[in-house]
Length: 304
Ligand SMILES: C[S@@+](CC[C@H](N)C(=O)[O-])C[C@H]1O[C@@H](n2cnc3c(N)ncnc32)[C@H](O)[C@@H]1O
Image (cartoon, rainbow, N blue to C red; front, side, top):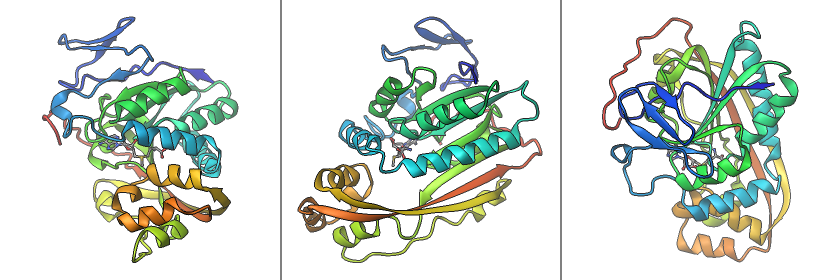
């Protein structure tokens, strides 16, 4: 695989093109962004932040890295990599063109690094570039340690700092979805691969931390169909983890929104568990953007 440095980053302030200097990105209008020591770039200007430290905290990032590195969710990563391969092959006209993949809300990079390594083996001499984006600086700082060939950026899915119609495949794994942002940066015919919890996901844990457990289906996508997306593929992956330890239960809870939604009693009950056999239930849906060129709104507002 021929890895290309992503050259389609755009200034988050005015959308202008960047010139790459060794330790800085400088836009045509003079806005300067430093490359951090770890190799990532923070393209989240203060006017795009809704809180001082948006996104996942250092503790959540550390818990997620520990849990994912144990390999318990590897079947999800494998499935995502297989679907990504299928969609790349489908979107590539000839091996001549570069294909740009982006992980929108990549967290500490486990899944995108896995996809990268899988495609490295499977895609031979294709030209690929990879952009991992997350609003959490702590998450991107971790991700940058995992893989030096992926372009890691701190930014928001609401206004990804990437040129309009320049990305072929967006993956969004349990992430914050912004179809307006995705639509802007996707090429016509591009894909969004959504990975979301299925109805039975972690049901054994939810039965412990909540007083009432609802079976919720993944969100209805009719609104995105109105934006010109169609569902091209839908798959479900369901498996049991086998008994996992108290420490892993703690890490799992901390890396999900359940930690904050659970009742105090629920969190205490989970903390007292010695082991738990969990159902993992995940839905993968691939959306295809219409091939008709859409009008791209290039006006950059302070925040969408
Ligand atoms: C549940 S985590 C999933 C992380 C990763 N995809 C994974 O599955 O390991 C959600 C991620 O979305 C990020 N996030 C939240 N709001 C965001 C936004 N507006 N733009 C980009 N990322 C965002 C959080 O910082 C967090 O890393």
